[in-house]
Amino acid sequence: MTEAAKPARRRGSDARVDQQPGFVLHSYAWRETSLIVDVFTRDHGRMALVARGAKRPTSHFRGLLDPFCPLSLSWSGRNEIKSLVRVEWLGGLAPLRGDGLFAAFYLNELLVRLLVRGDAHEQLFRGYIGALRTLAHGGAQQACLRGFEMDLLREMGYLPPLDHGADGAAIDAMQWYHVDSQRGWLQTDAPDELSVRGATVQAMAVRDFTQPQAAQQAKSLLRQLIRYHLNGQPLNTRRILQDLRALETEALDT
Image (tube, rainbow, N blue to C red; front, side):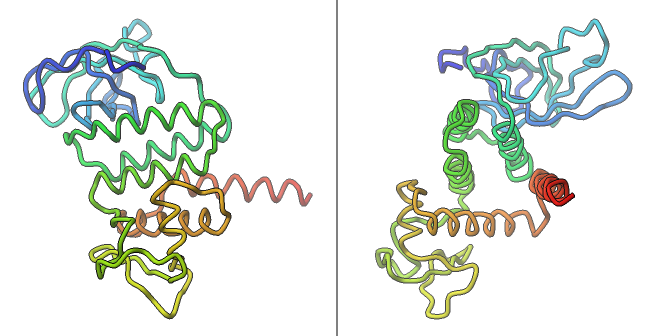
């Protein structure tokens, strides 16, 4: 998907927005024939749109409102939930399969659960497209997920700076740190399962997850931060993955 797509004609709660690049994150039935579609757009962030008649066989929306498809979206209305007027498929992304597809659903759930509606996140939108490309082409999945989690947390102001601790001193590779959601990185002499080495913080700063310890500690740390900002509520995609792995284990044992 290119950045040359036509920009929105109006912003925010104005009556009409035309040809806005975006993706469907999630949709659910509304009344008998319509859908409420949660989308992530370049200039307006996360939006809720009603696709009237989308479930009818003759609807011009049919086959277009699927996740991970680059779309051009036009909508109108001044209420919180706008009316979807037109959808065009833009193309440019390879299809997702297997683990990459499941990982992409995880990204969508993070966006739905953590982003408020109506706030623009253009840099995060570009990062989302990059993550989908990486997952579609079988790139380093764990590094891709960690990078997107960091992008999302930073965009929301939830990721502490990665170059210095709460005391202003540079991160020490040999020191242990505990993250405080309000204050940042706190040195600790009593590390626990939620603590990380300074080397891990440094690796996160340059997005180098090739070392197993740094990769595992970064994963645990970012999950901790996400869980905190979800008020401890579990993610559905993570629970489904755990269930699938449990079923695979049972199948191997039989």
